[in-house]
Image (cartoon, rainbow, N blue to C red):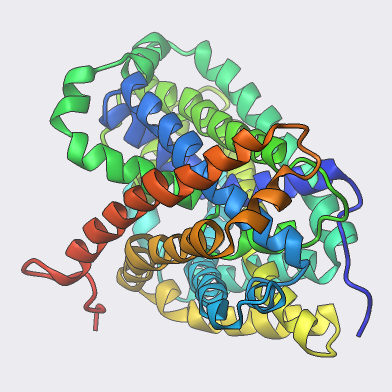
Length: 445
């Protein structure tokens, strides 16, 4: 078995982790939920969730990954807790599950990139999305997107993932920044900013029960927690760099990209008089796409916008494939290109129903968001904070230059507030899945 790869630079690890965190959710969900749930007041709640809950969780995953230098399943065995491998297995399965339908959405982005060149969706964006979102075309582009992901992962940690994300992440920030400057020049942009960023504490109070679970869930999903990605990426760290500093940087950059995306898409909608009260696929592929048809140089703006969406989708997708590839390489004498192709092909097959019917895609996403992610995060937190305990603090403090009090604060925050928040989020998700007239757990047969 060949020697295990590592990141060439600390910046490579940070940018790869940021790339994993910065995905489609930052662009098509975060801006709209922020506006819907009270603007700046929601941002405050989200940032509290990201720092108070997301950061302790990402640090727990970093500790497990760097201490073991192994994949998300084998890590627990190396740490001396073989029976806890089920937690790692759940993370691996969750990443496998999410990538199967995430790749389908990546295929949509490829289609819209081409449609921006021709202006194919300008006249009737809703009808265009209905035509391309499911069927053989969606299946073919699902395959193309997965092939891109496989190619990057097959090239390795340093030559594939690190080099790709060093280009991708700065590109996301630069392109979104340029688009935000353009959006600022549009008539009606100021109304968009007011809608997006003005604090509405009345909306916050009215929707508090909906806002808090969403803010916590958004922190988990947007930071790639509970899916094995951060354990896997941290396992390639060679050295005692500050995990605490890296975690803060990743949470900050991820939140910054979400806010930057809002400064692009919300003014675009207001400039064209389009109702911004939407989210999910319709937000980007209908509402925002429809705005490009009425803009000066709309085709160019569309190409640039969907290029950054594609980069964000790829940077997240490669981390999910790497989770399962790392497990295979650590446990079997196989070559990286072969195993990346094989496992990528299996993931593509799992995504076929989502490509042929968007109802299946919604079902896959609901199970991931409401059940797999929170229960995976809960398992990681219980292990790191209550089972592993003191050694976890020692690992976290390596290279940080911080006092032991910081480690103890992290430990008890994870043991109490963070676990309570995760349990509450899981409980609300289970209620959606199993209760009501149409339980979400039932597949769209």
